[in-house]
Length: 323
Image (cartoon, rainbow, N blue to C red; front, side, top):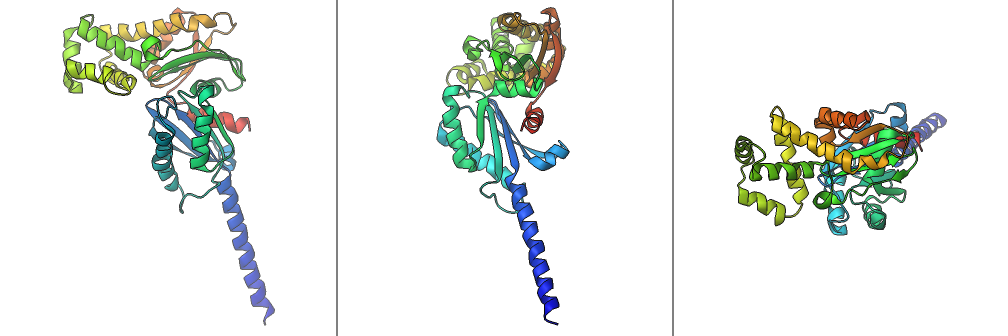
């Protein structure tokens, strides 16, 4: 009469222990990957074991952009703590625990080799994870677009960048130089061309008036946003939304095409030494103005293989296939 209750209790304890171990193991096999630009950062959170079985078992969290060149460690840590981890906590029934992440991969704009230690320090401290990989957003885009195959990979969002990728690493990269000296093809440079056009008169006055009315801006406010306020590139890139809404206007179509033609002529031409004529791109500018990008690519002897608005899902696929 005494043995049976004892066995029952033992069995219950054993089952609870298994549940706890399985839960802890599951929590410790989470993988977190970030695709960070100047405007926003997309984070993909997945349980490694579940994601291998079905790639759509993940959560995507969006925070403001992180760029270690322009932001301090304190600012980046605040974004991770207040925006990312707050959202991560909402994915679990109980508060965030240490060792939740088995692997963290952060691909970001401004993540040059000199910036790796800064980002690794901030992320390691905030996320309590030792297995942290930091790399530039261009390598992340190349891995997402090409996987383990070679090709020309591009980023066309707020900023722009490109490379020839051999399936393992970036072999050649034409420096983008930023929106002041370069970044042809980007949203920021599209904004520069647009602002120049509406105020110097190469674009119709009706477009100028419509933009200023919709954006509720004056000429003086535009100048202040570009020259006196921070993150002028983000401001300039916002004009792409107006351009897309009014893309039926021939002069705006030509503006978009000119931006992409300049991208090919100033950047992609330097990859002609390689045999491939396949090109792929990530970013909102490539995505929303796809037909113009494809037209420019064809005119310069390239075939577009893939265009993704965000590379984050394909980044997850890459890491799961290359564990």
